[in-house]
Length: 372
Ligand SMILES: [Zn+2]
Image 1 (tube, rainbow, N blue to C red):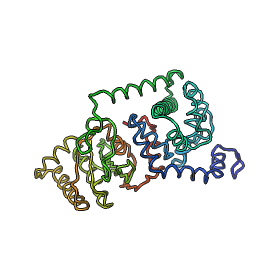
Image 2 (spheres, protein in one colour; image 1 turned 90 degrees about the horizontal axis):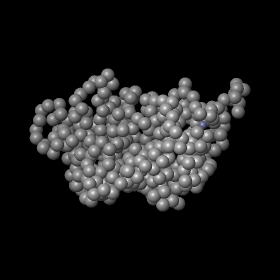
Image 3 (cartoon, rainbow, N blue to C red; image 1 turned 120 degrees about the vertical axis):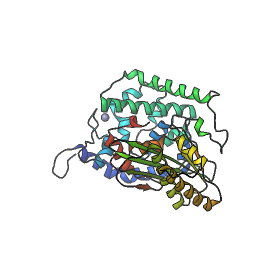
Image 4 (cartoon, protein in one colour; image 1 turned 90 degrees about the vertical axis):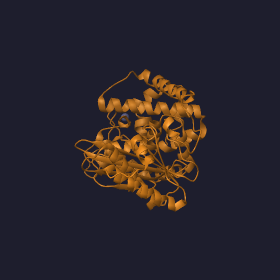
């Protein structure tokens, strides 16, 4: 493939391919990405939350593969480090010789082969439609493990025995499922109580209710990063916010600021009734006490209370805040801790622009390994 200068390049080859197939790909992609059932299914797969986040990123085409990163960082190379072909998501997860060899160890090859010629989201949608939940869980665990291994190999030159990866993924999945089934880990028993504190997956709120997860990261020399995610009862994103502030404050104050940021957006968009989850137990306790306090924290909490009252006026229902473990709060946590290099508040409604998330990951040199 030759570009305008007559020089062969992978980049021009990719642009040529993309130019021809783009419309079809976009149409196919949209069909599944606009299907609320698809997203609901994805967010409800019983598997580790970080795998669901990985799948979500894959469906949004924002995994940090060469071609995605190159759209953002001109100097970065779109080529696959293992074979020099353009590294698209489908290349990295299915077509590259590196991954093909490893998929071969998987007993249920047809779920791998079903993806032939499909975009990643269509591949996954096809599997959701045709396989049992057990097989879907196994497939997702393997896909995640292969991706993680590939990142390890690519970024850190760490190599594991090829044959080891799939048995490891399956072992990891069964211990997760066992822990879920044991009586000590409660299931979704009470939709109004403090349930998330005891499970390790994000749970959608009751029908008609919205949920906001927020988190903050305070890092010396970097400042404060706030993250908030708003989702509806179907688990769909209705807003994602990230804000970076220069200057430091106590972590609990930063957590309060993240909550204020999310509440303002929820009120602005009339999202009520609302459940608010923070992984900062001290903040939740402080809010529950509701005593007047004239410290910096007290002032931010006063702001939270006022915003909560404003939200209550929208639907007649009180805002409920509660503690949620870091695991169930993982997406907000990730936003708050990965927002390096962003100086302004960003608010996305419905669809966070993929390129920004992609850039953040590329910026950090992280694949999914950087997630909590
Ligand atoms: Zn390759």
